[in-house]
Image 1 (cartoon, chains in turn blue, red):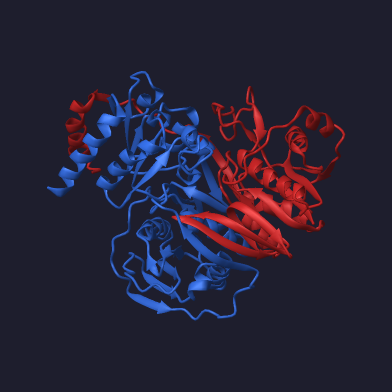
Image 2 (cartoon, one colour):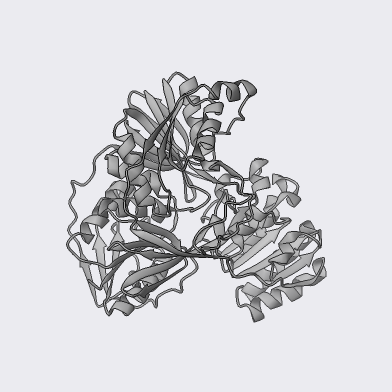
Amino acid sequence: MKDVLAVADTRDGGVLDVSRETVRAASGLAKAWGGSVDALIPGAAEGKVALGADRVLRMPLSKEAAGNPDIVAGAVAGQLQGHGYSAVVLAATARGRDLAPRVAAKLGVPLATDVIAASVEGDDVVVRRPVYAGKAVARVRMLARPAVISIRPNVFERAPSTAASSADALATSADIGTGKYRVLGFEASRDVALDVAEAEIVVSGGRGMQGPDHWHLLAELRDALGETAALGASRAVVDAGWRPHAEQVGQTGKTVTPKLYFAVAISGAIQHLAGMRTAGVIVAVNRDAEAPIFGVADYGIVGDAFEILPALARAIRELRDS
Amino acid sequence: MKIAVCVKRVPDTGTRIRIADDGRSLSSEGVKFVLNPYDEFAVEAALQLAEAGVADSVTLLTLGPEEARETLRHGLALGAHDAVLLRGETTMDGWATAQALAAELALREDGLVLFGAKAVDDDQQQVGPMVADVLGRPGVTSITEVEVADSVATCRRAVEGGQEVVEVDLPAVATVTKGRYEPRYASLRGIMMAKRKPIAEKEATHVAPGLVVEAIEYPPERQPGRIVGSGVEAVGELVRLLREEEGVV
């Protein structure tokens, strides 16, 4: 009863980088107990599995089964039964948020989501997690076993990309679906490649952008910053119908912890500040030098976003090209 | 078909949080409590299904203190038909909450049980799918739209990079997020009518918590940084700082 299971995130058969953060969080717990880390990969992952775990367990699933959270949760819970793991760690990604509660329910134990720190104290897992979208942080002791937690992306360091000493393929039953949940199709949104809650860099725009027609300026900065950047938006922008709710940062949207956050033409309402104040570095661009956003920003530029954005995108592109 | 909507009373999102003297909870002094904003989308979805003739009735269900009656009354004013208050403590243990709600829902015959995609206080996004699991019903999360025909609910889900269409057999559980459903306001007539609508009160099934909140703390204050400059002239220095001082670009 000292090993920890890390559940990897996969998409289209490949393992996502956030899985190394999951393994790192799991390793911290396993080390305290003197146990080892197994990384479970749901879906027939072909890609790199150098996740820094002691052992890799591949769980082959058909594409259909991998897209059904109930089937995946059943398969993960099945792996846990009889293995005596002390803790299970998942990532609080879009998919992980759908999966983790089902895994916990099948095991009959509570779940702590969006964990930003985890340790072992007196044999219990003790975690810290933001509440009220980051206006406060709760310290929570997990009494049940296994302790099931999901970690917030971009907070834990990544485990080294070393290959495990063993990689086993698990036998999964083909007959695990109930058939009551059927995925009929997927429509890709234009211009949304990466979820704002999972991005390492977020470029958010506010009401001061004056309309959806000016969003290409933010998109150009995002593109200059590379593949790990995503667009965000303030509540006013989403309420006005300029951008989809999926991009909203704040208490009625997503709470984000990127390494770098650009707040452009966002004044900084309390709900918005709650959702992004745990970012690593915050940059604010605003015409109003008195805007509350400058109170939390590490660096600020006072001025016209329409002039500053193209210059910023150009400067970053030149830097990355050099 | 009946619809049940599980709702929660939460502090208004404009509220400044104050930690109580026990260091483990929030002070409720001066705090305005509201129907959780995401639950408003779920209530709206249910009311639209009722107006379309798909559902015969919409029942609100909450686990909470006596004060949660206000929240239920507000939902009734929006148009829900009746409500159930499960008196009990809500904690951060969503699994305990899920079991208490599921115990009540198991006694009912709802074709659809709706939740808000998350509560803006504990922000765990877990009770809806946990209830689905306990009841053995299919559970679909973060839906923006639902249509019901022939004992099947067809839902659009907001997922990474797009929208997924999922079909579930009824009875089912779904959590609703912002999308098609624009919450309505309570009309004066609705508020008057709500006073006469029934709120049943029961003791919640007690479940021993499997996690304990030991402390609630304020997040570390961010030190205000510095204004690098104004206008386009400041861009070069900003980029240098982000690269050399912070190493983030």
